[in-house]
Length: 399
Image (cartoon, rainbow, N blue to C red; front, side, top):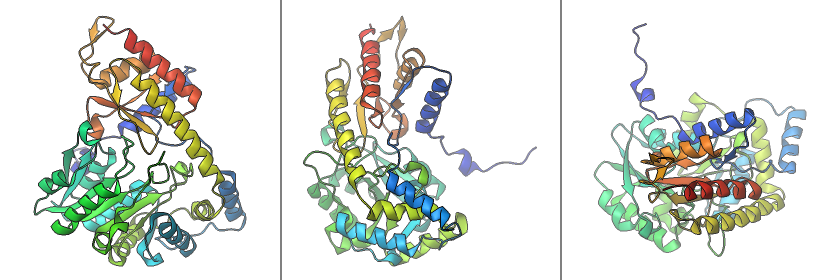
């Protein structure tokens, strides 16, 4: 056939994280003892009370279409959560419930962008941001941060990246893949630039409940009316409630933007899963004991992984303050030899680890940092220990 397929779709990069997870699962299915550090989801089961709410929804016949942007019951629960946890006032007509965080971002950029509009994305970034922006007709503008900045965007660098085509900034805190968290002072400086230069802030706060130590999550939209009016706050239940497969995300925004996103969604996917919406209501309004237990376990793993990596030769990292990832600088490994072969890239290092050590890591070229890799601690402490032992053995065999 001579028919040409979509150039827009052909330009989209496949998700490297999903590919790595799939490779690890394939090897496990073959009976190999694989440690997968690629997981972007909690290893815990969804809490029982949430599952019971879903079962009840099925038995009660809550299996029909709901309003396209979600049920009012769930919107009220989200509105309450926004007020109590984030210090934000979003009425139900400012909230759109979607089929997960990626869907929310797709709705946002479809509503915001015209062809050629620029979206500033600080690197390191979650690898889907540029692809979703491009699919919506926008132009990703990557601003690379440094370790000295704790991999966080400064107000000065932001201001220097703004042009007359800038429509939005993507601000991810806590950050995937670095685990870094923006302080109130940093957020106020960024908000000042956004207000003065007049562009939107897409605040991806998916990991907001996974913050450790004395740190506190702060929503940039809570820092004043001017920045509130320019912010679309995006979150969901996947990470904090171990509900990745349930696919429930949500946004808070102006009524105008919410109406546009709801309209877009009505013609694409229609409503999020009705049963998952009932489960989400229970997640937000029911007992939070399971969330606290998961948080405590993640914190224990975080501390262990961070110390182990700091003690290894050739690897460097910063202590993560949120999410469930450690961002590792592997640049000192490059140029070393493994069994007579020179290692020239982190993907090459990753291939050696998966094929010879049965250990899967996530190279971060697609996250904007080709010399780094990401390790998830959303796996058991026993698996973390085993995997880090293997990485340490690999490091010890380099020449």
